Amino acid sequence: MKCIVAMMQHETNTFSPLPTPLAAFGSGVGLKLPPAGEQAIGIYGAADFAFAGMLAVARAAGADCVVPVTAYAEPGGKVADDAFDYICDQICDAVRQGCDAVLLDLHGAMVTQSFDDGEGELLRRIREISPGLPIAVALDFHTNLTAAMVDNCNVIDGYRTYPHIDMYATGERAAQSLFHCLDHGIATRMSWQALPMMTHMIKQTPLRQPMKDIMDLAIEAVDNTAILNASVFGGFPLTDIPHVSLSVLAVEPTENFLGRGLVKQLCAMAWKRRHDFIFESEPMVDSIKTAKQFETYPVVIADHGDNCGAGGNADDLSVLDEMLRQGLSSIIAGPFWDRQAVEQMIACGEGNEITLTIGGNTSVPSIGQVGHGLSCTGTVRKITDGRFIISGPMQTGLEVCLGRTAILDIGAAQIVLSEERWEPYDPGCFTHAGLDPEGCRYILVKSRQHFRAGFEPIASHIVLAAGPGVCSSDYAQFDFKRLVKPMFPLDLEMTLEDQQPVS
Image (cartoon, rainbow, N blue to C red; front, side, top):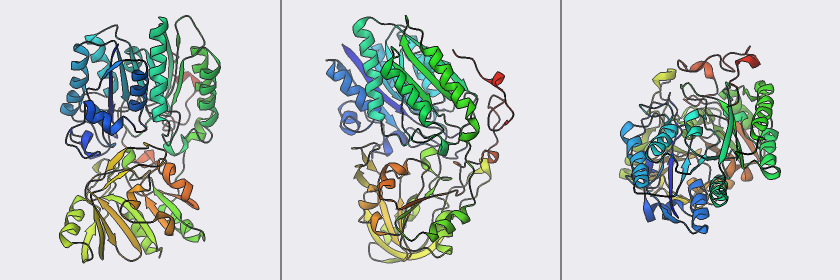
């Protein structure tokens, strides 16, 4: 059997001012282009990615695996058309050369300059080349599910965790289902429903209610019935497109009829709890006051408004500025995205004093945000190449490349500045530069939920800080024009009649 295994990952925040060119799909691992073939397998093949899980299952089945591309970019603004076409062409050209199955590690919330649904468009192009080709897809928990995705593949499975610590396992599940169906001549049916809900991402995690027992029931159905796969997608709300949703999907053999009922049951639970998915942010100043009151350390402060893991700039210094204003010290903070500052610090040299402004280089016109930097004097404590291997439970084994990275010591804080944006869900972003997160009082990271994967085990306390940014939980800041209305919670008085029926 010849099997194509590929990855195309991007979560698109349409309010972000940051473009996503082709180079972004390789820069996170230190490349100018997204890797392919043996290079891709060397980078992603042993890491905690759905791609790796799919590859392992295909190889165990004796398949000859072709890897045309593995494209992964940090969340940001819309994907450039030429970047999208390049990635699609690598996959589609491989399909044209002939294969027996396709395994795809996709995100589910990609928006390009021309397409609201990047994943659906890729799958449509593959189906156009080979209409009967068996296709299995692994999707992120933050998928905004569409008919184009469902109609153009045979199996879909989504992450069950947030932080996403089951990416590899999701790839395994999707691939195993497809190979099981191929081995036994089973055709599949997918039932799904999309609810008009923009859940707040801080309230989505299956680790806690209101999502926990919804996800638990989906998993139980897979474990105890003929349903092959069942996925609950929290959705990605920070995008102005017509198919934002919380959705549920079930995959089963065509002779079974359990999926539709499961989808209806889980959607009814989510809809009944819709108000529980609303997160109310407190003023950032109050959050820092709370952090200051703790007497056991370290205290992790998560700035979730400017989180590059949801498309933020990762260069607004408002939260750090407030921490310093309130007199907090023994701080480790970052990584903040500032290529110019890194360049200046490298020119200054390790051990030397420098005065400069860090951060605040990017404004966000879509929400009227002006970049907030921090003018300071400090010592260039260390310069690194920004490379480290993730040892925590999310994306374990991946070698990250922050680009050139510099540590600025301003006395009260050790500040990590990097050439590339990266959401800090592993302490390696600090320890690779000689910083000790467990030995400080405060750890400031720009993250919403993923930081818990690597930092919750060492935190005495966790404080969420609503810094300004394009990842804000305050939906009133965003000028949504293309959402299908009514939409909860923008329209709080919605009724059950407003729901989309099960497909």
